[in-house]
Length: 317
Image (cartoon, rainbow, N blue to C red):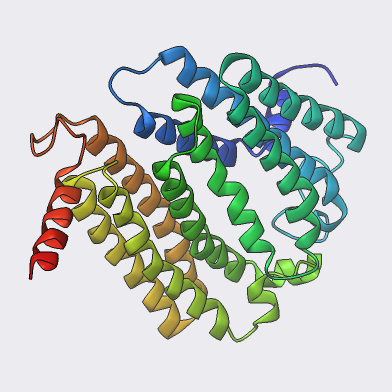
């Protein structure tokens, strides 16, 4: 296949360019939140590029393994492999090369820990998550782990170690992915059934367990997101904003719980994208904003300082 605009588009589709873009964005957020003071633009660049390439390769290998199943689903039958626009051999070689290049860039230009996390993510996504999709609805939890690692890679790319903020960022992405994906799976549950995928909405046709899970994970997002301020990574702006955004997202989950319609599921899915985008914007804005002077010398955020003061007063009582 000659390299032209059409073939480039096919390879971008194989790598799921939009999903890869989201991976790159969460990686950049993790990097910026980890930085203390000045940060290196080239390290940020290579961290994002390496993680994005590894993620794109994983997506390609996922499609390579599932091409026969994708051909049975209306939503995916026109993807490059089931439609025959790219051969399986070419797709495999391209995806392996992309993943290898991504991990190699991380090892050469960032650090070994970030490269290791990238390699683990690729292997977990392709060798564990992908085959589990036809076996158990718990595959969503494994997939959420894969999606939670990129912001952690951004963090380790900046400081070379996994700190509490990195774990919290990963937890936020993990919890967020459950209602996000369950809403999508609800919309395409008939398609997933035809393809032989055992997503929760497929094995839960009435939606009781699915909608319960959506609401519970939306609730869990509230304290998990707030923890980022409690440990001092962010401050008041993010603390207040995360509660407001979380409350709005929860309201969408509650509507789905009460009505269980495709319309409400679509609202949860779109709302999840808006929620994450605004949440990450708040993280970066709060982190990069000038300090409020509450505890500049110690590096403790205003929110965390008040929390500590309240705890001290209670001990005094």
